[in-house]
Structure formats: C-alpha cells, structure tokens
Image (tube, rainbow, N blue to C red):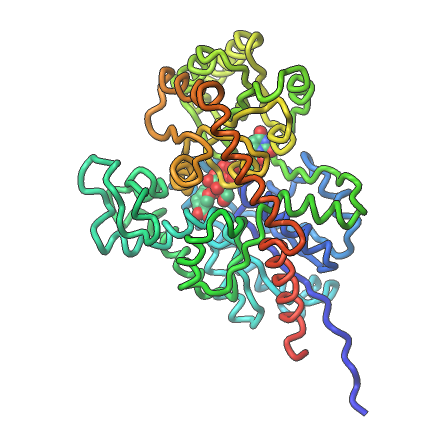
Length: 490
Ligand SMILES: O=c1ccn([C@@H]2O[C@H](COP(=O)(O)OP(=O)(O)O[C@H]3O[C@H](CO)[C@@H](O)[C@H](O)[C@H]3O)[C@@H](O)[C@H]2O)c(=O)[nH]1
Ligand SMILES: C[C@H]1CC[C@@H]2C(C(=O)O)=CO[C@@H](O)[C@@H]21
C-alpha cells in the first residue's frame, strides 16, 4: 500500500528592494499570505530590520502568525540616502553582490537555517532583482516578481528599448512637451516630460537607465508578476503588459485589501494599525486635524526619497501660505539638501517655518499617512506621486496636486492629471506663484469637480477588493498558485 504524503505547507521568501515604498507594500502582501497560513521569511538589510523594530508594531502584529521570520541580510549593503540615480545604482550593486551568495548559503540543504525551517517553496522578489531569477532557476524554486510601481510606469520602463530604437530618447531637443509615440497605448497623452525621470539621461549608456530598462524586460522570465493596482484603474495598459508577461496578479490597492481581509478574518472588528513606517510617526497631527473643518486641509508629503533645497522649500512655503488654505506638511528630517555642511542653519530654517506656520498649518517629520488621508478634514494631497501615496489617496477619494520627484513618479502624475482626472500635474516648474494657483484650483475653484471624479474612482477601487472583485479574485488565484507550487505533484 502506497504512503499518502501530507501536503507541503507553503514557505515563501519575500525579498523587497530596501526602501520605504517597497518594504511597505511587500510587507502588506506578506501579511495577506500569513492570513492564508503560509510561512513567510521576509528578507531585509540590517538597518531596515532595526528601523522596522523601532518604529512599527511588527513583532506583536506578526506574532499571531506562526512561521513569520524577519531575516537580516549580512553587512555590505549601501545604507546612504537614495535620492539620485547614482544612489540607486550603488544600492543595486551592493544588493546584487551580497544577496545571492547569502541566499545560496542560507538555502543550501545542509545549512542550520534550512534544518530548522521548512524548505522555501516560492520566492517573491522585487521586480528589479533579476539576479534572484537566475538563482531561483538554479535551485529549482518557482519565482514570482512583485513590481511595486504602477502598471503605467512599468510599461513606460518596458518600452525604453523601443524608445531608443525609434530615437525618441535621448531627447534630441529641449522640447519636453513633444509627444512620445513608442509607448503603445499612451500615444494620446504621453510627452517627454512624462516618461520616468531616468529617461531624461542624455546618454543611453547611463547606468540607471540601463539597469531599469534591462531589469524591467527580464520580468518576462519570472513565473508571474504581482502588481499593486486594480484592473478598473489600469486595464488597457495591463493588456499591453500581458502580451509579454501573461501571468499577472493585480491584487491592489494592497493597503486597503489587507485592511478588508483582516476585518473579515477578525469578524469585522477594526484591525490594529498595519503601519510599516521606517520613521517615527507623529500622531499629534490627528488631533490638529480633528479641529479643522471638513475637506479644508491640504496634506503635503513627498515620500521617503525626495529632497528639496532651501530655496525650493521657501517657494513651496510661500505658495502654501499665500493660497490661504490650511495645510499639514511632512518635512522628513533628512529631506533638506544643503543641510550637511550647515546643519544648524537648515534646522533653524525648518524651525522658523514651523513658527511662522502655526496660524495656517501644522508640520511633522513623518505622519501616519493612511490615517491622515482617511481623515474627514483632508480635502487634497500635494504629493510626489509615489505609487503607494497615489493609491492611498485614490482609495480615500482625495484629489491630488502632483510634484513628481523621480523614477516612476513622472508617469504617475500624468495619469492623475490627464487620464484619471483626479488632480493637477505640477511637474517641472513650480515657483510660489504656480504653487498658490494650483492649490486654489484644487481646493477652492474646482473643488467639487475634483472630489466627484475622485469619489467615482475610489468606488471602483473599493469594488475591486470586495468578494468577487478583480483584485480579490486575483489574490485568491495567487494563493492557490503558491499552494500548487509547494505541491507540484498534486
Ligand atoms: O509622512 C509619511 C509619508 C509617507 N508615509 C508612507 O510611506 C509610503 C511612501 O510610499 P510612496 O508614496 O510609494 O513613496 P516613496 O517612499 O517615495 O516610494 C518609492 O517606492 C514607490 C514604490 O515603488 C515608488 O512609486 C516611488 O516612486 C519611490 O520613490 C506610503 O505608504 C505612505 O503612506 C507615511 O506613512 N508617512
Ligand atoms: C529608487 C528607485 C529606482 C527604481 C525603483 C522603482 C522601480 O521599481 O522602478 C521605483 O521607485 C523606487 O523606489 C526605486
């Protein structure tokens, strides 16, 4: 009589690019998979590991799931700021050289780690780590990619090859408004200035342009592509991507999807906060918001990489104050660039602004953003158009002013302004006069119009994560596929 084998329990290794926007969404996915009983090993550099322990409730949150392990990478990974293409290259290079040898040692059948844990049955790697595809194929473990950006930005990156071939990049003149024709499906509205910022390089040998173009093309080699978006938002672009990467799981917006699945698992009681912040959140701003009228406050935040000069900061501040609209402004401690040599001076500028702002606004170093955007007093979001921020704003029906800083943000902001029509794209030139004009347009002159469209899209987003919605079904399919990967014979 043959022995019946017990099904192997899925154990997923999740490996995000070590930056706030990536760690955040991939940790939300980790928790969703934990809810299905999967074991998860979540791999981050030591500095990110420490910051998660310091600023979030990750330990208590994940203690309810058996088999969640926050695993540190060894030393040798670039820990400096990531605000330019060169910084990104340094970080990618260090990860590529440290991570694979470490994984090889960790996952070797004889390692102590492997003997105390069950074997890894699937790897989910950030969609810019093709070295991990090579490694996964070498050890025979299925690999899924998770690209944390929008489908529209992904598709623009994917098309860099065609853009170069057609001579659309590098740009031949100074006209950034010239229509771009070689990103299929976006011919009607994409201009040079809307391509991911690294496409502005004057030389096709530019390292970050080469890396992101190559890494994006490699996606087709993974067993599937997970995306934090929903079909009703980016359907036509997803169809373009699907021609090259047929197995796509659109399961977003992940922050809202996790909230709703946690509520269902806990019989609808409000879930604990799932903050994944790498900075300490200043929660006092919620009390300040409680005192403001409905939809009256503009929330201002530029995410985790953007930096501004002192001059830019002053222009922004004057535009904000002149608009007459109240604001809640996040100024990250490390976000003013000329701080290094004159730290005392910049600090005093920040303090000066804070003192002068008391009448009209409130400033914090880092906010509980999801809660802020859900607050009834918030009527607009001046954002850098990072993809998590964009999705969080969309789900709360909050219209946006976009000031894209780098990478995918240039493309996201075009979609917000021109395709979804839920905000204004303020890219490239933004002095105090433009800032004031944009704020008044969003928060006063066209307020009702923007709120109406934003609410319509928010409704579609909510529908996608309800039972039988597209993202809900795709997450179930992903869970099912990971189970099958663990038990290929069944
Ligand atoms: O005061 C703050 C500011 C931000 N956040 C959170 O931090 C995250 C920021 O993510 P995102 O809006 O995506 O911006 P970045 O941190 O800049 O994200 C990087 O990663 C994203 C996903 O790949 C890209 O879209 C961006 O361009 C890239 O800069 C969001 O979840 C916010 O809720 C806070 O909790 N408090
Ligand atoms: C620092 C940025 C370079 C590329 C990464 C990215 C992507 O997936 O293309 C998006 O935003 C960033 O955090 C990364």
